[in-house]
Image (tube, rainbow, N blue to C red; front, top):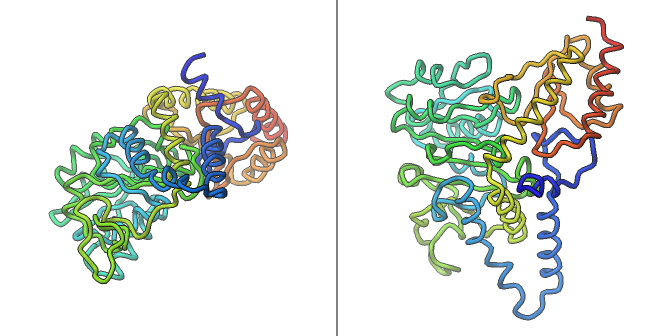
Length: 373
């Protein structure tokens, strides 16, 4: 059995699930890890909790392998949004960001600007929703201190060109919301200064898992505004408030959920063993299979057909009057998808069961026979 076949064996969801961009059902390894650690915590035998309460090193090493950052540059976050809040509140100067990005980034930028008045968001005009190096280059100004992007756009599935963006922004901070591609896009994360992601989607680690990775330059320039008791280098400091850690640890409020750390670590260890590039190739093949089905039944595809510009997201855009029909057809055939802003989003991982393809075919057949083109 090949590595990718063994990886695919860990998908437990029932056929018809094509909504990984919303949430990824837990992998078999994550379920086993969670069960074992929960059992350990529930029993709490004398001396047994030490391994559970010391999961941070394991977590940092797993994220480091996946991102290319050093372990000491990584700090646990409960989700992507919290990592972005830490980042935006710590930023000083002009920030170029698309208003069409997933709301976590724009909300964090505006809230930071309103509260502290030291970061100044400028709204990027995109290329029909796509954030490209050319669009960024045209809108950079001498006051732009940072550029924030989504690795994968949640609405279009478009994969940002990190290399091209790094080239045009120079030494400005590059902030990446990686959630829609983390674990399935073999991105050069080391080109970024800040990477924030959660593990509940493509990593299939469940809610409450995430990280913030900071380059040395980012740590020097960002102020750890929300640095709490766990954001210092000493353990259990009493009777005084000492300065934040000089490392990424400063961007932490409290101690992490130990079981969440273990779940995320297990998920990433599985990904690292297979290799993100291998997973990405399998995802690309599965997206192609879905595109071919859509073409067979003349279901309009709005997302890119270029494998270099897409991740696991396929966006269908039927005529407005047929949107409900397509959504209902998928629902009636047991296919999980997301309908949003006039489109239907299918999101597929490295495993695609033949039964799922049959269910999509049935949904498209029903849609095509009832639609008027």
